[in-house]
Every structure is written in structure tokens, then in C-alpha cells.
Length: 75
Image (tube, rainbow, N blue to C red):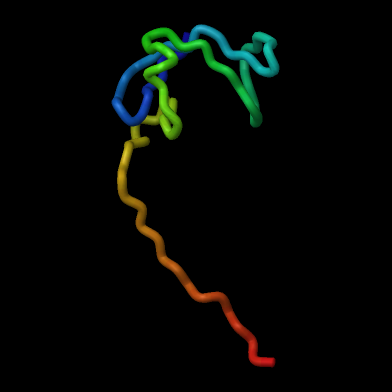
């Protein structure tokens, strides 16, 4: 019954059921988990979408990276 926000898109969905390995569970830990969601159809979901309750999570198309060369020792 939890309400979660789907990012990107800022759409609200409700969790109907959680399953782990085909079994209904009340809570899931790390690993593969299936969610039955109300408020969206499966074809509308795409790879990279995130379900969150955290209001600070936002979608972006930018990534800032700082590369440092590896430390090389002389032979």
C-alpha cells in the first residue's frame, strides 16, 4: 500500500504486492524483487526508471566524473 514516486516522470504509484521468487512477502531485502504496482501499466515502465519515497531523488541526463590516472611505480 506504500505510495512511491516513479522517476523520471514524477508519477505516483501504489505498491499492491511484493514478491520474492514467486512468493508474496511483506518486506524484501537485497536481491531480485517483483512489485505489483497500481497506477501504471507494465508497457509504460522502462529500464532505468527508479521507484523512490525520497523527495530528493531527481532525474538527470548529466554525469560529472573526475578521472585520476593510476599510480605507476618504476621498475
